[in-house]
Length: 196
Image (tube, rainbow, N blue to C red):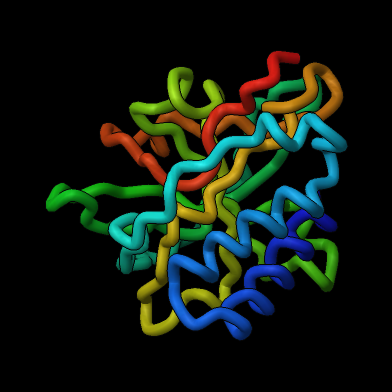
């Protein structure tokens, strides 16, 4: 997972510098994401699906930091739970409706100097289990993405956990019920079309 986040970060940074338009940069990012995926190999990559890039799913959220948050045990797709703490809450508007998501920090990654600023945003929405992976999707952030208590959420960059492609191999955190959005997020990665 660490290498995966590093690849996504580097690809997106280089793509944004090289492209002239937002839509082009995201399309190039998605192409690079597929080409460099650590789990999906060969012709299976043909079964990775994405919504068309839609700038309407790039929103500015207000960030409210958590105070004295405790460590939480997240259930996963496997036998091993993962430990996170609430880092803060993101409030934003999408389709003229208010929404909130919690963002978390991993206990494991905080011990690694290279990933100590990594933030984890898991969520489900009304497409989960239909158009998108049943257990939800992820969006990666870092603490430096938060400026003046604001952060850009670009749902076009949401991706599936590894367990969307391979059963029983990975311990993918399941988004908590607090991060269930009552709206369709038709952006980012769709469900993997090759059953496993």
